[in-house]
Every structure is written in C-alpha cells, then in structure tokens.
Length: 493
Image 1 (spheres, helix red, strand yellow):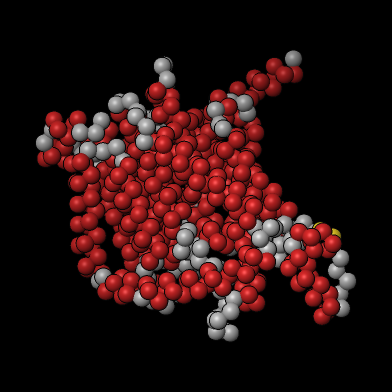
Image 2 (image 1 turned 90 degrees about the horizontal axis):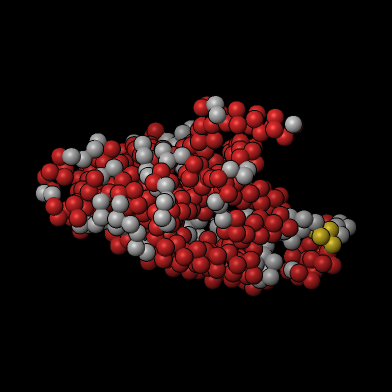
C-alpha cells in the first residue's frame, strides 16, 4: 500500500507541466549563464554552479531513476572520468611521509626540507602540492559527469530541447562576440568592472585564449542551427540542390537561417580580434573539419562559406586587420618561447612521473624548476594542456585519460560518418552531432598551445558538446532500427 501511494505521488508530481520542465530550465540556466561572470573562474561562482548541478540536476536524476531516458545511458563512458575524479581526491589526502617517499620521492624531499628549515614535525603530507584544489577539482569533475548525464537524458526526453540548447548557445556566443568587438572599437568599456589595456576582444573572459576557445565551441553550433532550419540541408546531399534553383532556395529560407549565420559570423570575427593565435588556428581547423564532415551538397557548402567569408571580410576590414597580421608576424618568437617552457617543464614530469604534482600545482613549482627565464617572470601554466595534465596527474593517469580521448574521438568519428537514412530528421540529427564533434576536436587541438580547459565555463561547454554528440548518435541508431521513434532525432524549435 505504501509503495502504491509513493508511485501515485511521483506520477502526479511529474505530470505537472512546470515541475516537469524544471530540469530543462535548470540545465539551460547553467549553460547560458556560466560564461557571464568571467567564465565562473572565481571559486565562489564555480562553487555556486557546482551546487546547482549536483543538487538540482543530480537530484532530478536520482528522482527520475529508472525512467526510460535515464535507462538508455551508457554508464561505462564515465568510468575514466570517475577514476580521474577519485585520483584527484586521493592526491589531496594526507599520507604518511614514508609512503609519500615511496610514491613520490621528490615530494617527500620537499616536505623534509620544510621540516628542517622551519623546525617542523610534519609526519603526514598529501601527494599533491596544492591539496585543497585537488578536492575542489574532484567535486567539479563529479558535477561535470552529472551535467553530462542530465543533458543526455533531457535531450532524449524532449524533442524540443536540442533546439533550445542550440538557441541558447548561439545567443551566448553572439552576446560574447558583440561584447568583444565593442571592446576592440572602444577598450574603455572594459570587461564587466575590469579595465582592458589594449584593443582586444575578451568578452566577459579574462584570458583571450580561453575566450577564443569558448567562441570556437559556440559558432559551429550556430552553423548547425542554421543548417537544421534550412530545407536544403534537411534533405539528402545534392537531391534538393539539383532540383531547385539557388534563387528559389534563398527565397524560401526561414528567418532563423540568416540569424544563426549572423551569430556565427560575429563569433568568428571576435575570435580573429581576440588576437589569440591558437584560437585562430583552432578556428581554421574547425572550419576545415566542418567542410569535410558535414553531410551537405557542394552548393550549400559554397553558399555558407561565401556568406561567412564575405561577412568577415567586410566587417573585418572596417575594424582593421593590421593587429591580426602583426600578431602572426611574431608567431616564430612566441613559438620558440613556448618550446622553451615545454622543455624547462620536463624535469617536473620526470621527478613526479608516477603520481604527479597535483592539480593546479604547476604555478607553485614552476619558479623552482624552470631555468633560463627572468627572475621576475612566473609561469602559472605550461600553455599545453596535455603536458600540464601529465605533470599534474603523472604518466599512468595521463596515459589513461589520453587513450580515453583518442578512443572516444575515433569511435565517434566512425559512427558519425557511417551511412544514415535519407530522411530529414536523420540528416538534422547528424548535422548537429557533426558540428558538435568538429567543435570538440577544435577544442582539443587548441589545448596543444593554450590552457582553455582550465576555464570552468569551457569545461561545461565541452561536456555539453559530448551530450549533443551522444544524443545524435543515439538518434541515428534509433533511425536505423525498425520502428524507431522520430521524435528522438528531430531538432525542433
């Protein structure tokens, strides 16, 4: 009798429209607002979003179990992130110095020197040199996993939610792009309540490299939003383009198509004027991948490319391209300096190859290990996410993470490029998944020369890309199966 009453109560509450839509509103709130206050880089802001995700979306997931959208999730995909989360927490736990001396002799030597110089009697120490950040990072990784599960379940539950997500991300990218271009034209407006010293696009993000990484995630999804509203893109490649004249196709374009393309053009322009060379190179990489992988006719590719290039050329010439060209003129010197940082950081990796130095501990040790730099210059980042991850986590954990990335990219690429049904819903689903996949690849490529992963907002958006890819692959799989439901693949809104 008690079980029956609980079941009835649950069904009654879930039937209320507002309560049923609450998870969608909460997820959109996180995605849309997380970049606004410096990309949630401040620990208090980051902690607030972590609480919203864990309590709000995590509570909904526990409440929804075992509903059909949650049952379809592959929990094995989260095994490696869960291991990394536990390891980051383990690096923060105090251990006996004798055990630390076995696992990380260099770390034990530093603790012993502190005891000698300060006259201390410290007998316990964590493996990581920045222990509290390790715990904070572990909780943040947990929040990212919960966000991925919640977004994936919501994308499968509501056929309108993918469209809402595309609109939200495009709106964020457009706002950040316009704000950045205004900073280029008038640096005096600053960045929120902070000042800007030079005419560079920052938006609401402090570091221009992280700003460019965020926009390189957003603009491919704006392109996907335009193409999913285009009748030409919704059909099989070449079929409609061959049967209709270009002028007729343009006359029947929905208003969402030019709006999405305008948003993408603004974001691309803002990436250029961020003067982030890594961001610009990543943008070119994403553009090339989209041209190769998107299931579009040649005419549609040409039209979209010409429209965006013309937009960038006209407005870029008005703002002036001299700063961009000058920035790339110094790429040789900057590249040599980056290589010097990489080489000087290798002793950190060799001394801590097994356990790592701990999350966000590079800035604490770089002043001691990096040689050949001015005494008044302190590097808090390696400017290479892969090398810094290996230094922080050690080679075994870093290798596990990198193998997981490579295997995931390979598997996603094979599935997205496999033949799909020629119906409009399948094509739209594939367009969204392919755009998200290309944006994610650009994000990973950008990590070779910058530290965009370290911004909480960028991590949230990378997880959002993974959720869109997962939804897209699930939708394509549903379409291949007899009796698959069309609403799982449709992009509405």
